[in-house]
Length: 338
Ligand code: UFG
Image (cartoon, rainbow, N blue to C red; front, side):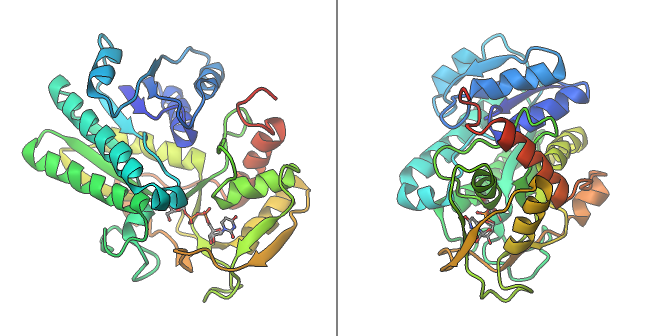
């Protein structure tokens, strides 16, 4: 397949591009580099031993996108492009809705114009909101009592894709609900490069370990979990990338949602300990107040993806910590010149 990756220079996009190339597919990366670097795609090409075509365009702009993709053929799309910082989405709701929704609308129109029917969408377990039960399967209610515009935008896009499939029965769409992606390619050449202060646990820990930040704030230790800290289902980004390839290869007419997670929960203290063991570096921390909007326990039931996509995680939290450390210690300033 020749696969267009929107937002393909980002964290998950770059690892997925590499995985697709390794499986014999061709890729085209489309990105506006608002929160990513062309260097990520250059390194994907270096690791894959081939140059990766890169198209710079703002996907919310239909004319610019159409012009940028003129003469470039593709027969499937993985749609990663979008804004993803939960806290920022609360402060800037119109920007989040405009960017995430407009880009999807432009993409769907373009796909229909060109007769491209295969779509994999980068969704999130956040569409389940505050879990009614754990582990969550795909039958868990979606789009109820979500706590931030980022999460709502993901749920709305799932609905937009579903409505589009009703009007266009040839569409073969897969909604991938990611749990907590962590880790990096084992080479340490590509990884997560957050701008500014990391919002997420693993990149924050990595920056503490490398000496860029003094200590980790642990957001609450009185949750109803075994050690009182929040429990999440951490999934290695290479397993996540493999899940996209499986989804593309199994896409069928209509819309199907899959959880991509391991089925195993780890606490904040578990992650700190695993990172310390993998890096050999102490990670100082202080327990502070819970973060507004956080929940105690989010763990995937990944059985549907295991069964239907013939996909399961193969890497552990320890593998993710080792690879995240390789990336962070070799690239303390991310893709910026070190
Ligand atoms: N945490 C800390 N300190 C930090 C950062 C996080 O203690 O500095 C804790 C959180 O309280 C939580 C756990 O670490 O218990 C994981 O937090 P993350 O911010 O890494 O991840 P979240 O589970 O909050 O959110 C992630 C993605 C969202 C996505 C969601 C789906 O960032 O985009 O998973 O479950 F929507």
